[in-house]
Image (tube, rainbow, N blue to C red; front, top):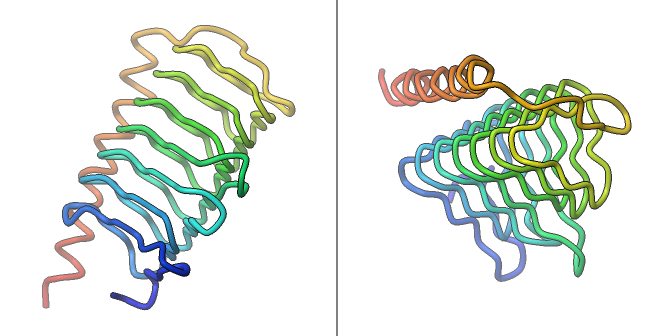
Length: 177
C-alpha cells in the first residue's frame, strides 16, 4: 500500500482500480472510492471518525478535506460530482451530478440534492436540506433559485467531463517514462 494510503486501526481504504488518486493526496481509514473517481493533490480523506464514500466519476479537487463526526455522521458523495479546490465536506450527503464550488463548506447532516450548485465560498450549515436543482450561495448558505437545464450542461456536466479527461492525462503521465 502506498504511504499516502493508510489504514486506521482495522479500517482500510477501498479504492477502485480505475480510480485516480494523486500521490500527494492522503486517504486514511474507512474510505471507499468508486470507479473513475479522481482525488487530486493536497486532498485529505480521513475515515477515522465515520465512513467516507466517493461515487463513480466524482472529482475531488486540490486541497479538499473530507471527514465526519464519530457517532453522528458519515460523508457520502454521489456519482459525477465536482468538488472544487479547498472544499470541506464534513459528515454530509451530496447527491449525484452536483458542483460544489471552490472554498465552500458543507457541514454535518446537511443534504445536497441532485443537480445542485453550491457557490464558491458558501457555507451549507448543519442539517440544511437543499432541494434538487438548487443553487446555494452565501454564508450561511441560502437557496437562491432553481438551476436550468442549460446550467446543468454548462456548469455540472462540462466540469465533470473535463476532469475525466484530465485524470486520464495524469494517469498516463505517471505511468509513462
